[in-house]
Length: 430
Image 1: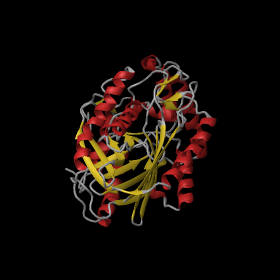
Image 2 (image 1 turned 60 degrees about the vertical axis):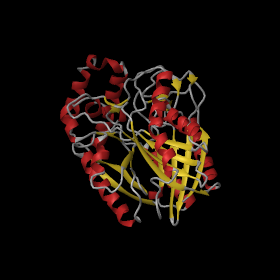
Image 3 (image 1 turned 90 degrees about the vertical axis):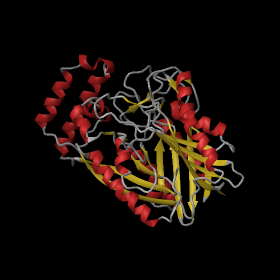
Image 4 (image 1 turned 180 degrees about the horizontal axis):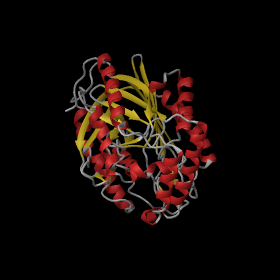
């Protein structure tokens, strides 16, 4: 497999607003660590994949679609072979419009577009042959923040590495399901995924480019939110440390993919949204407004979100907008591992359901190719809480219908099956 890598510094100057929390000190006042746009280019025979990975919360769906279309046309690739994902750090500039969660600065986004293209071009110019290896560790940091009977976490830390013949690493990917919300102050940071990436680059031979994904983390937090920078660093390094030994062992021959390892598949699913008439909208909004004291943690941002969502829903009703939204699902088969990509903050149970019957370990890359908001499990709708009842106000959309996660998991299983049917036999991850 041929591998090309590149990275570009996308750190803003202090003074830009950050995205991810409705209540935080704004604007940013300092830089804790560097934000990066990282690019991984893979070529395996006729198969190609261009992966752009950004230290940002998420991308507006329209902007993500335009960026992918542009890359696909420029490189002559089908969209299924272009992945634009984010680390979901809550300490980066706003690149998605979330009500009350940081204003998008047009000059930053414009500069970011140019930086992304520079990184993509650079990755195409330095391809070299590498072997694909995998490793899987376990990490016990993540907690289900909802604390209901359906609590679920995914303790697996999955890793894929691309090794040169001399045993050094050109690139590495790490997936662990945990929200990047360690920090909550006014500093710019990649949060724990940024620290995990630094740790992998420092401790693996070859100083590889490191891409880190927070997995299917819609319901999962670190042990605490709003901790010190030193605690965030400790947790990020702990996640990275859970796979380093396995990657070092894998480069010696264990878990090496045989034959053609790269396969991609993608589909677009019309995810049903809840239907609302005017009476239901007005009743819901009235209930929210009568319970402002119960949402005091959002301060004045909760009222702003209610009013904005109310106006949006009235406009939808007037226009007769359809009650569905586009979900971009993809599968990247990497020999002894498979990645499912989805443009949502999806609950951790999704990975388990999507992977039923799979012939290799399956991991979810969320916040990929845009963002539509939270997609909870069916049982979570009966339990309630923020992700089900209030998050849609800040995303400014109707919420998905109950059963949406399970519907997407079924489509993901079909995509995984299509990749399995095409791929050559490969060694399984142990």
